[in-house]
Length: 430
Ligand SMILES: [Zn+2]
Image 1 (cartoon, rainbow, N blue to C red):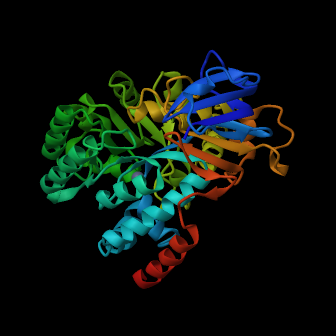
Image 2 (image 1 turned 135 degrees about the vertical axis):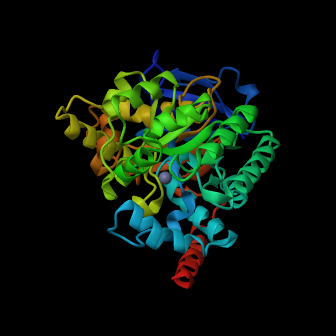
Image 3 (image 1 turned 30 degrees about the horizontal axis):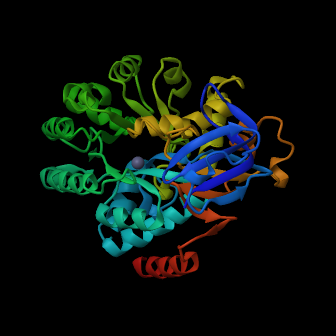
């Protein structure tokens, strides 16, 4: 089925076009075929099969949001072990509970995460968690774009790396771009230098990219200082990890030298403001990094340190925090933060035709109802979405040319059943 969205406001994220006040979008198969001002008068109509026409009046269409760092199935631990610093929280609460997880927990936890992400406008997520084969199945079933990553952590790294390489082969054989994978070494402080070196080498062979936590807390900085007298970035540079396309989550505690290393090695930085605030990890120097030309995108981190997977909230918090940190309200305006949550995320995850509403790009887009009390008037659509929207205004979600949500209702997904089963499983877990 092909799709025509007519009479809509369009945030293209395409420099030449910017915002189209009233225009249309034609989608053929999984690609955006045409984007234009004005009204569609039916030229080349024969090219399109069973054209579904969506009336875009009072809607804004924009690229789907990209959650560039999360642990989707941590929805299971939402609100669990609250109020502890990162290391105590992980060691005393999260890791013991995670050791009880089976494939079933991951399947349901990811299903719930996908419900939450899709309904608030996220069409692609970069995951790092256990049982990624389950995540792959859920992503396919839900029609959400997923980048999978098996965490490689601690002593058992060789075995985990082998599993990750096998998963990579499986995603390669899928023959579409809906699921892909990255190697996901947890962090420079939870792996030996030797392990990092091998993972860096294997990453280069398969060209998958590497997803890793970098300099999240002061504790991490101190551990590496004591162990190697180095910073996280120096360790990753020396071990060859940075010879890959790297997606580095957090990057909170960086020296000036670290920022140079990140810039020179074209490391993609993921800003996770709510997690950093909740765990009191610190404030990353996002504005400085953007000024250096570093590609910065946005992630929610897991639901247990956030406590949701809502990228609309993440954009708002992220921009507000940097404005306050810089004591400068001109920093991170609506357009820039939306670019970070769309185009920059696509680039970080290795998609060169994603994150814009432009001919030839993958048809991942969302439609926001502008006729909501919190979105009128609409003087500046970028800041309206970044600072006034909360995600509940997303009413259409299209991923890879397929409609996943229409008028606020999921198609082919039994939301009530998932929530019922999820609650039952959480009750058993505790
Ligand atoms: Zn994380």
